[in-house]
Length: 383
Image (cartoon, rainbow, N blue to C red; front, side, top):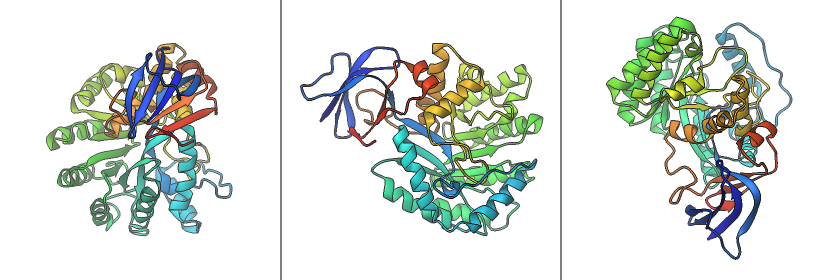
């Protein structure tokens, strides 16, 4: 049993946290112990959750690789094929370096997409399964079978996705059903049928913009309801929701909330993004994620979800205390809910995963993003 005291929660209350058997035994202002670890007034948050990253793509720790400018998504995909095919470091080694960075920053739960395509087969899935085994005591890893090069337009990919699910991947992935496959109903039918069969979740990258993207969001809602997968579906990126009129956004937002569909945004600076505050107010679970980190798509990213929460706040010009609390929620509670993480949060009976940051409050933590952090996993300090 380990007790941490003299901590400040997000509401400014001084609290202690007693941990036993990997769980939180008690939390509150009266929790103390003679041999307690003194938190020195640090801000305590539940450990960060990364709901969207591509661990198998990362070049973390490799030689510098600049990004590429191109107008088409397909060109980025082809460039990635060239870069990764020339790299000789095993995917799990590159990913492990990045996981170490993420853990040190306070993340103990991660959902990662895994590329699956005929030219690579299931090699990346096998590598990420090895990674999960090696890191099981430090980080909870979930995976998405992701058809980065297209699903129906790349013969053989559908069978590989099925095989990946048989290997223990938890979530069926999709990619721009209209823009990449050119067969939105065909892709969605395959994804949702497989998810129902495997009792799995769904996570669809949707980059298609404007009316085409919004139409696909509504199709995803229809498929979610028809498949009975409420609470198990996420739409990643969904730039289109930042491009449509307010009345249509409200109609779609309320439907997303009713269907239990989550949204993920990396809050990019170069394109419209889903309006987080408005959608959250409608009851939609909106989280923030890193997407690619130091890969062939972009050299940016550092694995720090505190910085990703900051970028979300910065993207929307948030500056009030309640804004900063919402930004942190995108990297903690909303992200945990979006990926179906159970027993999460600073409450008795939940997993004893939390991060203690040398900051006085949420706004101070976001605006300074201090590196002085202590990370607790299953009740024990690990970083």
